[in-house]
Structures are given as structure tokens and as C-alpha cells.
Image (cartoon, rainbow, N blue to C red):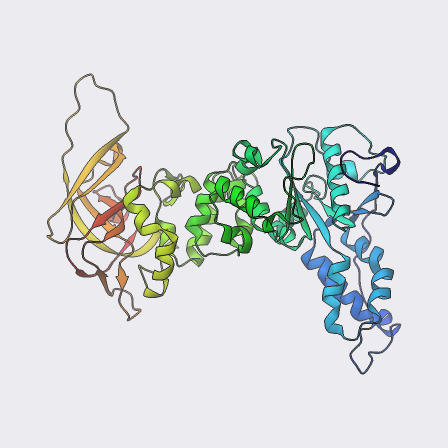
Length: 512
């Protein structure tokens, strides 16, 4: 019988729950009841269940939906999952020649599908609802979506399924914290990620599809190696079993997201090309302000405590963690509003989009990738109690007084300023900045991506090539500046400075 479309009456999904059982343990008595290991390395029952438990408790979600052959569905926890599959796994694995085959066989038996979707404003099934034994044949849109998802999971040979609406006990802070931290891994380990696009009937609708505008769906696009898109009526949007193997689909995804085909196919989480990942995230929105940061935890493969209620502090903590671990000078290439808690940290990922033609040239990925081995900038920048500690080439400048405002003219919050260098080595610098910074008595630019010397020591000599553009900050200082030092001036766009000739200059440590 075809499983496409709505649920046939005779295969309606019935929801049950299995209460949490004591943790699965394998004590000496269990092991003694198992057969001894054969000389050829064949696995024992204890070996089988140990591998199973390690996979379930470390690589799989805390709760899953079990879909039986007759389409009865049960919400189960990890302990129940191990018990449920125990007889089948022992039967299948007992005749294996070697223990080395166990992980692949167990993983194949426990494969699951993951749902990616845009949450409805109301009507999504919750963990608490699914934890009550009842017949869920409701016509609520959220339950209909979940039933259709479970059908698609079975079409892909998965007896297990996971949805973020009802498979996370959000009343448990420990379980919610684990889910947010491990969600990227759970999507990556899924047999298939099934994406439901409620606003699309074809690929041509992607530009208006809200799924591509939400913060959490970025990792749901990047993490899974196998993904399948369905439209508003649960129709397939391509003929491929895996849409990451479909040329037309990849072209459409790359166009709407700005993410290269290479990253769509082979994305690796971590603190490489962080600025590029921030640009991807800048195009997306989250309902909770904290989720701007939390939705990037898996993408950046970084550890961050979850604390809903902290508001904008979440992104500040994320950036501090990135700065402490990352060595790419490009993460300093941002402009616009800074964090209300730290002037050297951007307010949001949107700050990484504030670039113009000049700065684009020095920030292109295909350029700075080749420059990584050449030791550009200070690789040891760090956050301290005084702010961001960074070695730069410091060039003192003079402020050309801006033209006086006309009486009765419109009050502007920003103004174009020009900084003039006494040195014959640099061209003047212009920038659009907040007028509240103009009372500074001293001005300078801090050049970030100079070529460091080979000594690797602090306070070395930085080199600048002739007729090149370099990323810089505009700095100001006055008697009111903290610690009597420099302050980073807020500019609307990323600022660059051009050299007239080759420059060698000792670097200076600043705290911003």
C-alpha cells in the first residue's frame, strides 16, 4: 500500500508512551551469562549490548519515536530503545565473524529519520502530549505533519524518528541543554533528514520560503549528509532519494542561502572560516534572542552553557569563546553596533555583512585561505579584563575637521570623517562613524592583518606590502578613555587603509 499523502484509515498512527526505566547496566552477572569470546574474535552477547549502549547513549537523541510495522507509534527513551532492540540485535550479530563489524551492523539496525521544519505558531505536539497514552488521530496541523513525517521515515526504512517538537522534554533543563548542544550531531547521524517546506510547491518558491530565514534550520541544512525536501502537500521537490546528490537542488540551495556547493556537501563544523559562517547566520532570525548564539554552537563545534533569560549576553559569551579559541584575524572584520557589554564584540552576526568593495577584496575566502600559513596578524589575540588584547601596527592620524552643520539642518547620527597621516607611507582614511566619538583628542588606525615576522615573539616587527589594502580599526583616545588607552570607534562599514610603499614597523599592544 502506498504511504504517500495522508494516512489511510486502516494505517492510522496510534501514539503510546513507554515510561523511563532504570539505566541499562551490564554487571558481572550479565557478562557471566554470555558465551565466552570465540578464538576468531566473534562477538558475545555482552559485546553486542555494550556497543549498542555506547551508540544509543552517545550518538542518538534522548527520546525517539518508534514506528512498528503496523504503524503503531511509541515515544521511547534510550533505556527502552536498548531493551526493545536487544533480541533482534543479538540474533543478527551473534553470527558475525569479528567484533569490528558490530558498530556498523548496530548503527544500521538503529537508523533514524530527523524532521526539519518551521514550527507552527500553535498546535505543535509536545513531549507531554505524546507522553500520555491516547489515540492521536487529531486533525490538528501539527499532528498531521508529524504523521506524514513518520510515514516518510518508514519509506526510508527507518523504524525510528525524531522531531524537535515532541522528542525533547523541554521542562527538563538538563535534557534541553543536551539537545541544544548535541542537535548538530543528531542531525548528522540521522539516516535521512526530512525537510517539510510549508511555503513551497517547487524549487522556484525557495526565495519566499520562511524555512531558509530561520536560525535553527541553518545547522539542519548543513549537518545531515542525506536530506530530502518535501513541499506544502508533502510532494517530493526532486526525483532524488538524497537531494544533496541532485544538481538542480544544490544550485537552488546555494543560490538562496549564499552557501557554496562544497559546504552544502562536505560541511565540517569548527572554528575555521568563522566570519563566513557568521554571514550565513546573519540572513536568519530566531524568536528567542539567545538562540542567535545557541543555534551556532554545533556549527562552530564550541561548548557554551545554555541559559535562557540572559538575552543578548548569549551572543557576547559565544564571541568570547570564539575569540579565545580561534586564530583567524577575519573574525575581527566587522562593523556597526557593538555588544552592549563589550565594545570589541559585535552586537550580532549582521555586523559581518558591513563591508564594501575595498574590504571585500581582502576578505574573499579564496584569498585568505592561501594566506593562512603566512602568519597574518596577531594569532594570540585574547579577551582579558581590560578587553580584547591585540597586537597591531598602530598609525597615529589627525582628524580633518568635518564641515560645520547648517543651521536648522537635519540632525544626523553619523558623519563622514577623514583621518590624515603625517607619514608618507599611508593614504588618508575615510569612514562613516557615530558623531558621539568626535570629541576624541587623539586618533589612530590599528592595522590588523599585517604580515608577522618569523620569530613568533610578542612585540615583533610587522610588514605591509606596497599599494595594498589592509583591514584596520579607527581608534580614539581622550582623558576620559578607560585606562588612558584607545577606544574602538564604531563605523558603519569595515575600514581599510592603503599603503604607498612597503612598511616595516614594530607592533603595538592595544586593549579594546
